[in-house]
Length: 116
Length: 114
Image (spheres, rainbow over the protein chains, first blue to last red):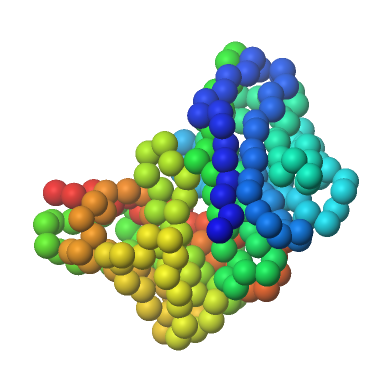
């Protein structure tokens, strides 16, 4: 079974600065999908960014980008120009292509605090 | 607007009581999911359903039951067999078979023991 590890329980960043959240995963599959979700205090789950494993190019969405290292099974999230609204719990998630059910496997999450 | 509606927002359970959490979606998605979230932990899959009248156990199905009689609805029952039900419960849906499409989530139900 696949596992997802987020080794940073909490991170802090100064407003307008850049922060990187780490995520590693364990899988024997060669094709899969990876996601970062954000959960603000409202508890709503919001998709931040997604990456297909077969794509070598790192995904970007405005101030959010990923560093996808397939051989190292690493999928870190970089947030540039951090804003107060970025404060939230961030979850990394893995989805198998082969396994029935389109299930997501989540990491334990990283709390991001943004200081003004 | 399309989305997922979970109700109630807060729910209290007495000892020995079964309670049912509602999840309705109008996104025309085939697949629906139930997750449990405990403090400081990620989401863990309870049950999932890819089509109507079919569902599978996730990683922590013991003490829970579901039904999928309609495409739009996927209610979760927390039975008295679930000894530690206090948690935040999230329902999600997506297009079955389209792997890079994200799951859409409801706003959640917080369940507590009286």
